[in-house]
Image 1 (tube, rainbow, N blue to C red):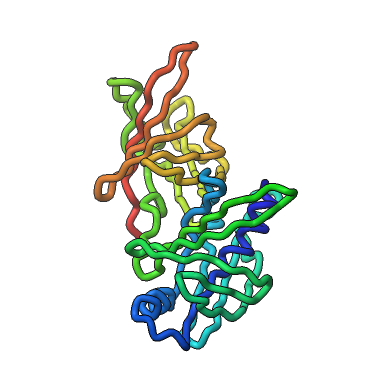
Image 2: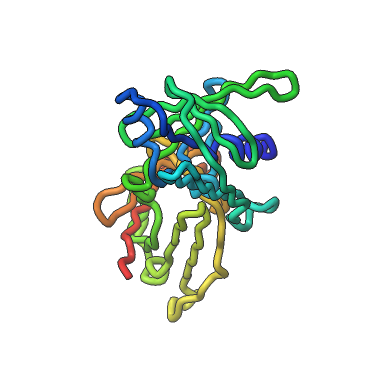
Length: 261
């Protein structure tokens, strides 16, 4: 599926559009909308959301007034340890009228392009292995793009198991986690020695995160399975998940405070 997503990403992210000859006002306004920089937000294949990674969401498409475009495609490497600039594609585009556009670059393809507020929606069909795929790529204008609220550095402040608060030591409160735009995070934890006289620093832990919508996240590498609910209130982040203790599921919550550098 990763190779298929790569093929689709290269094909559809390079959306392209311009009309120099149409006198139709609606068509002209549609063409004017595409000029600018766009970020890949979502890919839907046969009405199924593909849950693209945070790395793939760094993919950008910049459409220029002179009928050219530049796309930058990002993908994780094979071991999911780096988010890499996979390819830079330059090409040309033109309007075919009736919201249909042709792009020429790495491939030549025709797409139907519509707009919804700050979103640009590109649709086309492709036959792969005798299967017709109905593909929809959704982009967000870079002008209105807002980074995920999780991005930044956070320190642990409170912890709860069910309704009971777990009192954190000063060493534990030294712990922090930092989330990066490309879908990676670093975590540092501390604990007190048996005499409670000094803090011991644990090795740096790294992992991946993904926003799957509806305040739900997947956080890989922290030992918690399933979706994690994360909400925000000013400089606080509330992390909620289910923890199993002696076979009994208990709701856990950790409160973090953002570290402002």
